[in-house]
Image 1 (cartoon, rainbow, N blue to C red):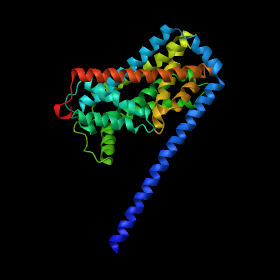
Image 2 (cartoon, one colour):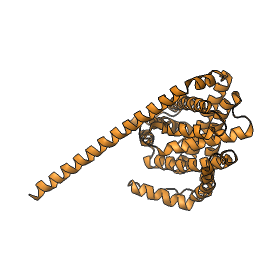
Image 3 (cartoon, one colour):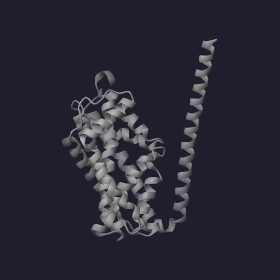
Image 4 (tube, rainbow, N blue to C red):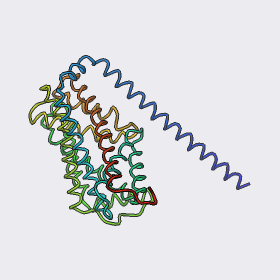
Length: 325
């Protein structure tokens, strides 16, 4: 009798879990449909201004802007590689680039956790500890938040009039820098690893590694902002140092805002909305929307390009172990 009750309870628990998973999956799809519908509606309402802005963009500026995104992504890989290399045995730049860039394409699937899962699966095939890869990605998220706060602070003189809440970054930056202290970082990372039932760090994080990775992340975000500034400056919309600070702050804040809305592919809608909102402090709505749309497309092209090149280089220079080939 007891066995029957246990089996019944287990069956009901599985049904409840299954129903919950189905509900969450459909909620994600519905949210994605709403975001896409809202984007299409907004774009259609402002299409004339958007199209007029797109037509005025010189091809030379577009190509230079795309190159800036590619450089930014490549430098971001170096930040991630710094962490991976210091957490265990040597991996190599080509294999690191393949795991990071190809795995990152998972962010375009609703529920950005797929990016981390894909990175860990690629690591497993290359006989690299999955916990090590996850740890590097986890720490890089923290570094990205600090880099975004830094550019948010630099953009404060431009933003503060229309966005008084931007003063938040002046508080977030010192808190973020304090959280990057190796003692706190090691403690927090080990807590997360314990939560997901993984072994603690074999090699503790230290100042040199964190500083080097943060430096790469900051330079990476600068190039992301430079890409948007090149587009805006090409039509005289946000020129000079003020425009560069505004664009860099917009992209940095937008990327990190999108990171928190993980149920949407690559922060769809949220990242773009933040970029538009920040650019509105200096640009008309139609132009801000046009630049956000072009930026989104450019990041997609750059992600696909760098992932493809990294996969080819890794296959050419560092073939997988025979057992996994």
